[in-house]
Image (cartoon, rainbow, N blue to C red; front, top):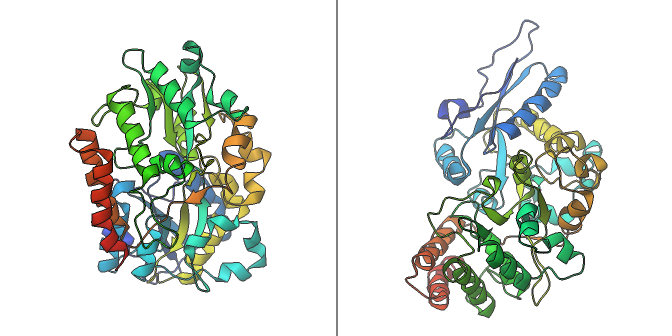
Length: 421
C-alpha cells in the first residue's frame, strides 16, 4: 500500500501541519504524522516510497506524507507556510534557499548528527556541508551534490565528423573555444541547435562556469560585492549573444527545444537529468565536464540537502527520518538520480555502473574527478531580489536592447546595494 501523497502545484496547507492530533494505534502507541516537502518528480518520489516502506518496518507508528511543489515556486511557498506556521516537518532545500531560511530562523539545528557514530558524518564530503554551517550549528545535510555537467548528443557529433567532448577531454583539449566551434557546426543542420545553457530560461547559473574559467565570478569571496561586471563576465555574455544571434547555435528566448528530443547537441544540467536521459532511444548520448578556460576549470556545484523546519511537533522523529534518508542506505537508494555527497557511495560500483548510466570513464572524468573541485554558487539571503535583477538583465540580452557591458553595469548598480546593506 502506498503511504505517501503528492500535491501538484502549491503545497497543501492542510497537509503542512505536522500534528498527529495525539492519536494512538491498537497497541496504544502514539501515531506520528510527518510531512516531507520536495520538488521531485514521479521517479524521485518512487525512490522515497520504497525507502519509506523499509523505514515503516521498524517504525510502524510513523506515517510520512510527501508533498511536492514545482522548483520555481518552492522557496516562496516555504515563506508563505512559515508565515502561517504551517511548515512541513522536513524537506529539501537548494543552495539558493538556505541563507534566507537560516536568516528567517525557520530551520532547526541538526548538530546531533555529528556526534552520532552510526551516522558516519565523516563520510560526507567536507566541501558539501559548509553552506549549512553557522558557528557550531548545522542546518542541513546534503543528499545531492553534483557538479554541473554537459549532456551531449554523441550521434550528432559523429554525424558531423566532430570529435566528442570526451575525446577532446582525454587530451586536455576540451576548451570553451572547442565547445563554441562544435556548437556552430552542429547548428548548420536546420532545426538543430549546437548547445543550450538553460534548463529553463530562469536558470542562467550555468554560464558562470565560463566566467570562472576566465578568472571571474558572480561575487567577491565574502559576497559583499557583485563582481560579474568584469572582463570575464562581459566575455561570457558576449559568447551567449554570439551563439544566439550570429552563429544561431543556441536557442533564442521562446524557442521550444529539449535535449531528449534530439535537436540539441549539448545541454548543461546536473547529474539528476540522467533520469530523463536514460529513457532516450533515438540517439546515443554521453556526458562531459564543462570546458577549460584560460584560468582552468571551475564547475558550479549543484546542491540540495535535507532540512528540519522549526515548529515541528515531532523533532526526534523528524531528525530520525533525516538520519535515515541521509544514511549510506538512503543515499545508495537516491543515488539512482542524485550524485551522492557520501564518499563511500560516490566511489562505489553500485553508483557508477547503474543501468542506463554513461560509461565508467565518463562518470569518472565528469562526476567523480570534479566533485571536490567544484564550488557551490555563492548565495546571499537577498537571493530572490538579486536573481530578479539578473533576469531583468537577461531580458535585455535576449531582446537585443542593450550590450553585454551595459547590462552587467546595470546589474552591478542594482545588486550592490542589496549585498552591501
